[in-house]
Image (tube, rainbow, N blue to C red; front, top):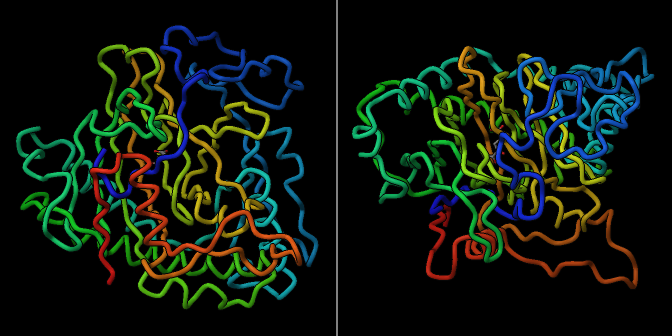
Length: 400
Ligand SMILES: O=C(O)CCC(=O)C(=O)O
């Protein structure tokens, strides 16, 4: 709960996330958790999950491909699942018109669901394997050794370790919720943490290499966002100089005992920052998003892809035109024969402390005040942190 990176906003209260796993266990072929309307879907719109009976597994929307300047829109997304797949490669290699097509696909995704599955990104896969393996090696250490790394500490750019049950993402403005069934490591060059452990020896270099490469990918996304918003390609560049981004690796262990009622791998929340780039793992008990219609839908896992979503700061920046969508990680089904451990890697792209978030030019209307007053990112992050953790806790941001 002390983690400065905790992405908190919305409670699962009153939603089906509160149901214990056994209560929403359904048979194959029937839409699962949190989808009261699922059984009325058009035939072929979903495929029953063959491994995970706590969620419906959606057939992914087709990747957006480009033929000449004509983009094949993933218009079927509504039928096939709400999260579109966007191939961003033409943005770096394509013609002007193709770049525009990518920007348009991203704009539509950000307006409609706030999530997309990004392919064609060019991120080095060996860095993913490296951080995955070395983090797994840490999580496999004896608890006593892991717990020598604290949730916070005096080291700028240090590591933070949150043991199992130490965070409840669905904790909201005042609401207490049951802890998530996960263990995490966090790091940001601009955040205080504890020392890096002696073993695994490659932990710190692997994390720093991944962070650096992710920051480059985030820069590409910034220019896609600028194009999507009709802004100059470098519009966001000075605003992100010295950005306070962070990395988190999350271990969702096997569940040897049934979760408590309402307990999830990660409770429903929205991210409070600007943009999240997530590598998921194809294991039972995965990521779901809450659609505008209030339905929970699985996010497709495409090997080698990243799930991109915008956070509350971006929603505020766009005067609520782009949406920061609630998401959660559900429990795996009870099946002793199948491994269900899952590990994901999240890069949270955030602003520097002094950047002011105020309604972006495309959303300013003459004579109509924006929904939110200008606020620096530092003030905003502090506000959100206190909302989630109480006034006695203080967010320790670096970066000046
Ligand atoms: O592990 C996942 O798939 C999602 C994690 C997440 O939403 C978060 O940590 O904010």
